[in-house]
Amino acid sequence: MPAELIDGTAIAREVRSDVARDTARLIARGIRPGLAVVLVGENPASAVYVRAKGKASEEAGMHSVTIRLPADTTQAQLFEQVDRLNADPAIHGILVQMPLPKQIDSQAVVRRVRPEKDVDGFHPVNAGKLLIGERDGFAPCTPAGVQEMLVRSGIETKGSECVIVGRSTIVGKPMAALLIQDAPGANATVTICHSRTVDLGAHTRRADILIVAAGRPRFITGDMVKPGSVVIDVGINRVDDVRAKNGYILVGDVDFATVREVAGRITPVPGGVGPMTIAMLLKNTVRAAELASAELASAGAAA
Ligand code: NAP
Image (tube, rainbow, N blue to C red; front, side, top):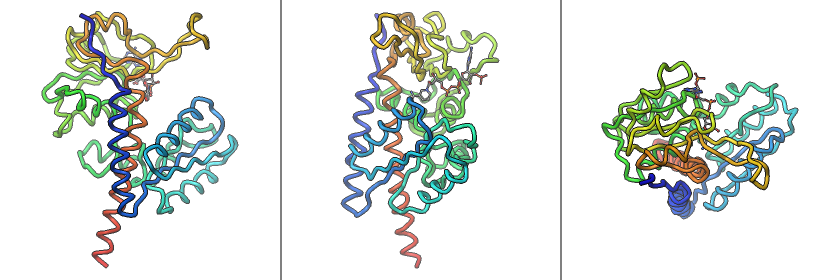
């Protein structure tokens, strides 16, 4: 029997509806969560992401700001914008869309955003908090979305063999950090694989939960998967397809046709992990607003 689909679109809708409810609750207390998205240059894919993020935050009832800067913006000019947003009490989350033009040091920009407003979860302070297991930081949206998806699908992570293919800073490493915590939706035994892993299939075939973020179209095939396992495909790749209207289709890092015949549950691409990423960005922004208001209240009480 083919694997059951995990419907990321439906789960993301649930998360976004929770976010809209929490946003309304905060607004009733006089706090409107605010998200600022900064786009430098005209990268078409980035422009699509930025529009989607702005639209989603407005739909959730948030204050939404999009700042578009020219491609020749200097690092100092971008820092100026980030500093302004850092100081703006109406903005609780700041996201600088990557990739940035060559003249700008991306890591320096990541570090410039105040950790309390880093809803992308890329600041080293948040990466450290995630690893240590401190709950007042922000986890990167894509791996946080995968964890949320597992929890909301009733998939038990505790004690499971979880294998992650890919060790990037935005997906693989934080994914592992989330799943090894002694916390709900975690407590897994985690293996991380990468391009220097010897005999990848020997690892992936052991996985009760296999999470793939390798950036290689249809890379994981049915013979690499344990029967009945859960397969989460983070990959989004454009591949040429003459039958498609625009000449390409989107596929994951998992060979859906063969893996579906072996796995117990699987995420599709598109409609799997993708929609969860924006939903988690909104969730992080609401939490940033909540944390900021709690801090203000305790500062007021101490004064
Ligand atoms: P990345 O930075 O390119 O990292 C890819 C990882 O895969 C690297 O750690 C690499 O190993 C590993 N890898 C490559 N070839 C391998 C092989 N033959 N065997 C084992 N490991 C191999 O990619 P990323 O940013 O993590 O993104 C991964 C995928 O997820 C991409 O398709 C991307 O488009 C997608 N993505 C989706 C979302 C979403 O919202 N759904 C968000 C982010 C990314 P080395 O470290 O040794 O090179």
